[in-house]
Length: 289
Image 1: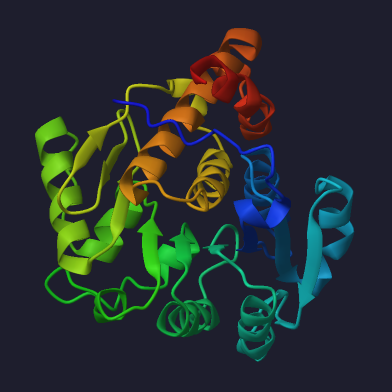
Image 2: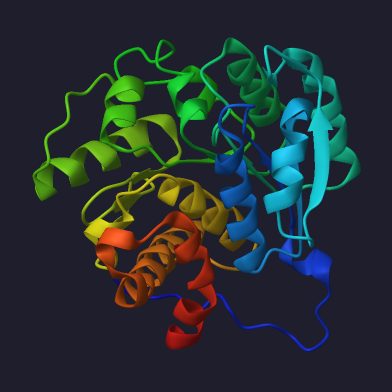
């Protein structure tokens, strides 16, 4: 993969130049997913990060979130984000000039999340990275591999499914051969006018025209929270200005894998956990600058 240099910064830069990211994630039973996403976003160069989550998860989240990240506790039902929070989220995106939203990590499968995602992608011309249960919430929306809400969206959408999530959202039975993975990723991205990141060995990234096969990463990254870290990195990288979106996403995937490779050398593949990947993001960026 050709690495695109998206890391140069003007000495006159200030934090708003690198985007304000809103991470919407977590639930009472899965508070760590959104934390990993938000923590990786701030480590990946975001100017500002706000983390929105169900208010009952506050005690755990407050203990584990990076101190640089702002918190936005939301109204909830059954300890999950409710659609009553939708108005607050939309107003926050508009008022704070949010450039990128990462949504889905640890939220649980609930119709409320689908409605919140729909309201965001239909209203704002921003980057929206959809992961995990954000993806799963659309599994009944596809017809012949097309999701109308994606095609008609104002937002620039990036989805990050693992194979089973891809099957649910596309209706395509997964095959692990490289050629098949490339073709289904490209076709789904093109038909829905999105960027699709199909995770796995040699993660495939496509915007429907270009295809990138990632060559970093290792089996130790098959661990809880690794995908949440990737979502955070992507949400930060897409905010860099004047660069090709597909190359920014592909570079995020590369850095995620490279950080995992560096972590595995210290921790071993057996003992590697997702937060180890975050700890090695800076080293991964340094090594290719």
